[in-house]
Length: 191
Image 1 (cartoon, helix red, strand yellow):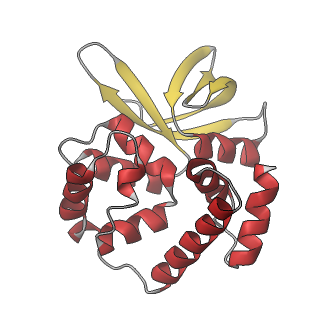
Image 2: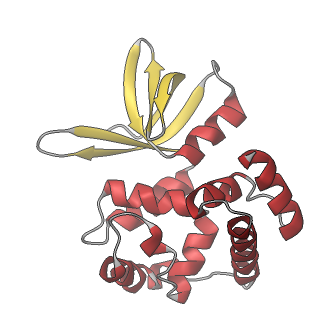
């Protein structure tokens, strides 16, 4: 199985990239935040690397790529839940940061999870029930971070931005802790 690839991005769309590794182009499914992170860190034509999950089915062999091993591990946790496939898990990872997803699951906040297309209330409850115990040891700082994220999201929504684009912009500025500064930086990305 393929676990890691390093090469040059030669093509992309919102859900995948084509990574040239020694003359072979691998199609790697990922999300817009991962693509943006790769470009920000490595640049357009420089070497880029992805942690890979290889999904083997009867009719396909799909590769899913992540910036960090931690994202890959969380993805594997999500797909261990019955009823959650790789595409749904990728959708869940695209709605918020890992820290916020962990907090949502540990506190039973299914609202975060039901925002993903294909994840209904029953699947969200199943994710919370099956993964809650596996995500032990969350700090109190996460609840503060989560409430700040919600406040920033509501601020952007009140300015007329769609929830999806506001979430994507906030994911790109997740390193900023001040809510006002986070909203300002997200607005720059959205304009």
